[in-house]
Image (cartoon, helix red, strand yellow):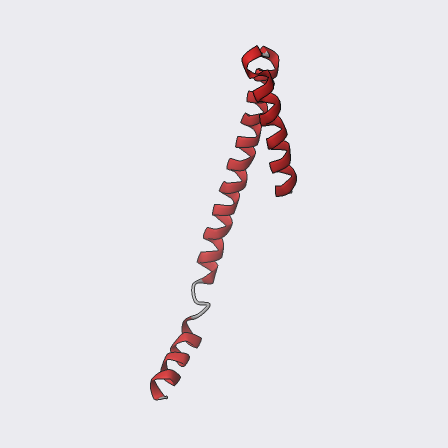
Length: 78
């Protein structure tokens, strides 16, 4: 029982220390993630526009399927 009380006291005194650094790092990582996601979305839009512009016969049906799937994925993620 004495060990448990000592561990409980150590846990109580250690939890929460250094949270400012952790929160700052987490916020930085989230900002980087959002920036990367925006860049991916932008590049995806540019690629899809170029494919539509070129309109290759071999990719027409594939493009429609990919576009449909991407719309479904975006709908479920939002």
